[in-house]
Amino acid sequence: MAKDDEFDKEFLEYIIKGIVDKPDAVEVKRSIDEMGVLLELTVDPEDMGKIIGKDGQTAKAIRILLRILGAKNDARVNMKIIEPEGSTHTRKEAPRASEEASEEASEEKKDEDLDVDVKL
Image: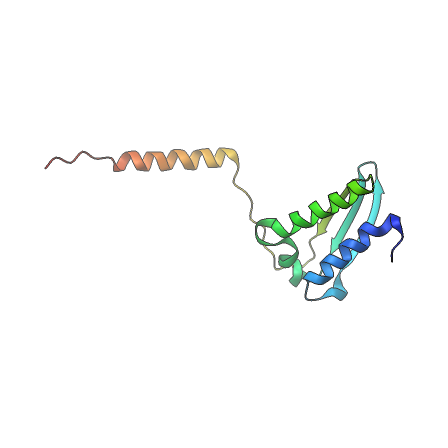
């Protein structure tokens, strides 16, 4: 078993190796700074999608588990996923608030254009 001060690193490695197809390519680098513990995760480029998950849900769940583990040990634990060269994962950027507002306005305009009084 790992030393108590590196239990978070071992925990992350265990979870990630259980998810990916190429567990030998999993690397976790642990560092400590004024913000707490930072775990930098590197996986095979083909496994990036599995680690991130649909809409980032898998990565979010892993981060939640790490925060819980950190809270138990009075530490703040964060995970950073290092995106390797050749990664097949494509990042979808969320629309900005101004873009969402303009899209809604154009949809409302289309709805107004469709309102036609028809008399029979």
